[in-house]
Image 1: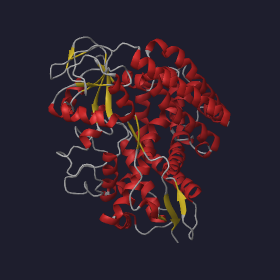
Image 2: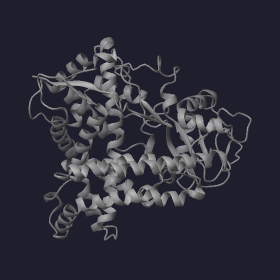
Image 3: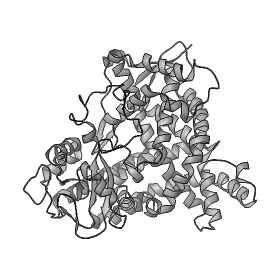
Image 4: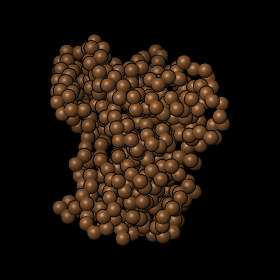
Length: 510
């Protein structure tokens, strides 16, 4: 994309944002629901100042919601981007919430609303149809075996390209940019196969889409419903451009794979990636969805599901390891564990889930970093689909509202985690300690129960591979001017993003 085009897009986005905020705060009516308002106790409507505070400092308001209401078993409302209809339920009522059928509390409808799927993806069905979740779950078992091997091969290749092979000179690397590129290439290897996974244009347009969908979804949620159709059509233009570019790149592979499937050859003789699994499943169902557009959109959806949590956490893991190293000798202890499990570094070593499970210290580091750097503050959203639904504390939930639990506040509760805001690398590497992928009432970064992220075990292996390869093949350190302290995370409304402009120093081991 040209600089002029990008600047024009930014100008349109900023202008729309300002107009939407103005209309939201000063013109649009708020729903008057008889549920306590955080920071505006006793009022029926949020004050304008509370909305503004949420937009620019959501973490403080969400922490107040937890301390004042949720921790004490009381439901409350926060001034979310949807005119105050985000209702937070105490985590202790999680089992009650999960027991409700989808016709009562619907997670797919809530997610489609949050990301504004009608405009960002072109149709809500790409998130709400059962086919997508079933496809992902069916694919995870074979991918957890073959995918790990392919991920490792591509990880090592992409890491050399990004971090280099210089054994003499230190190189300044932005880990947010570097790990995003490494993880995207390595993950798409088992999603769409080679050579697409290393195609620079393919990866470029995928990243453009990923980095477009979140802010656009946030802006559209800010936009009053009366204006949303107009603004949504404007924001659909970039989506159309990106998808057309990706369809052109995918077409040769799509045609080749469709021809293979139609030939009647054994599936074992063809590619074993998610793209092939999707196409074969649709072909065997004789589905009209077997077309390039549907496949392209679903490649995007599955790539987002597979990579975003991983590459958002990876930079913080590296920063946390480096900052904690002086106090806890983190790097040496992790390197010792890696040698114990894998032996000395050598070419051609191959991983499996079995090796990954033996890395208790590294697993603890990942869980602790996820605990303190959870991307989303709210988790497990559900849209209320019926009238007169009551919570266990007697609150009547209005139809059409969104309810959710809080993840980050519970994960930094001093009554649950002593010294909660400090990264303690081996906090969980103790008898009875929880593993990275374990979920529960007080650790909801991946959700919980049947709606927990089905790929979290694969994410665990991938992050361990990434960190292990870096610690076994590179020297890493924080720049001297950082004084041993990691850069701070960036807050975008209620999203906790990794530092965008920090660096670490890397040098290849001899």
